[in-house]
Length: 315
Ligand SMILES: Cc1cc2nc3c(=O)[nH]c(=O)nc-3n(C[C@H](O)[C@H](O)[C@H](O)COP(=O)(O)OP(=O)(O)OC[C@H]3O[C@@H](n4cnc5c(N)ncnc54)[C@H](O)[C@@H]3O)c2cc1C
Ligand code: FES
Image 1 (cartoon, rainbow, N blue to C red):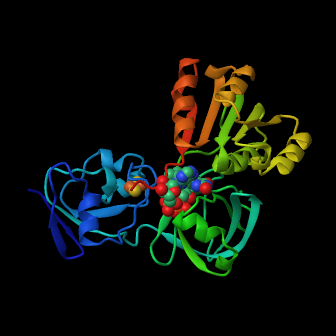
Image 2: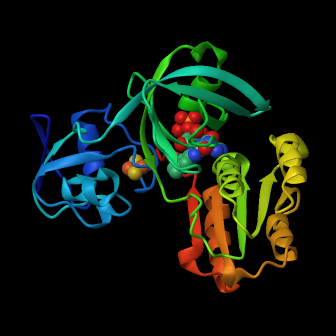
C-alpha cells in the first residue's frame, strides 16, 4: 500500500483513493474546491515519488518540472512525500477595496494588490482567505486598471461568496494565486469573429476579453452573448449597451433563459461562420460542456474554443 507523507505526518493511501482524500485525513484544512483538476485550489508539490501525468494537466511547464501537481485527481502507484506551496509560486496580498451589488445575487468586488499583479484580461485567480478557504474567480478588469475586479455570484450558504459579498469585508486582506487559465484575447488572432458566450457571472472574463480585443484594435466582429435567468440578471446591461453603441464591431446580445435551449437558439440565429470563429465559453459547467460539443459538431475548431467552466466545490 502506497504511503503519503505530508509535512512530517503520514497515512496509507487506500486502493483507488486520491492523494487529496488521504491528505484530508492528515489535515482537514488542506485547501481544495472543485475536486476535478480544474480550479488549482489544491495545488501542492511532490518532493519525493512520482505523480501521475493526469494530475499535472493544465499546469505551467515550470511548475510541472518542479513537481507541482493537483492532488484531487492524483492516484499514484507508489509512495509520495508532499509539501505545500513553495516560494516559487507567488501569492499576492490584496486589500478588499469595495463591494457593490450589481443585481440581487451578483456582487462586484474590487481588490487593490500590494504589488503589481500581472495578468491577461479573462484569466482567473485562486482567491485565498486568511483562514485558507480558497475559491476561483475570473478577472473582469483590464491589466492597466488600478483595481482588480471580480464578479461574485452569491450562492445561498456559499462560504466564500456569502463572505465576500457582505460589505463587512471591505478593508480586509485576501491573497491571490495566479493568474491561471487560457481564456484571453490573442492579439495575433486572425479569426473573422470572436463569439463570447457566458452564463451568469461567466460574463466577468468576457467583459475583460471584449474590452481587451477592442482596445487592441481587433479587426473582426465581436458577438457577446450573456445568458441570465431574467432581464434584471443582465447585470452589466447599461455598460455593455453603451460600449456596443460606441464600438460598431461589438454586438451585445443579452439572452433571457426562460425556455430551455433559448441560448442555443439565439446563437444559431447569429449565423456565425463557426470554422473561422474563435469562441469563448464561460460559466455554468453544463452550458460550457453542451455548447462545446454542439459548436464542434457545427464545424467549430476545437483549438479555437476556450472555455472556463465555473465548477463549484464538490463535497
Ligand atoms: C475556473 C473557475 C472560475 C470561476 N469564476 C467565477 C466567477 O468569476 N464568479 C463566480 O461567482 N464564481 C466563479 N467560480 C465559482 C467559484 O469558484 C465558487 O465555486 C463559487 O463562488 C461558490 O463558492 P462558495 O464558497 O460561495 O460556495 P460553497 O461553499 O463552495 O458551496 C455551497 C453550496 O452551494 C452549492 N453551489 C455552489 N455554487 C453554486 C451555484 N453557482 N449554483 C448553485 N449552487 C451552487 C455548492 O454545491 C454547495 O452545496 C469559478 C470557478 C472556477 C473553477
Ligand atoms: S483542482 Fe483540485 S480541487 Fe480543484
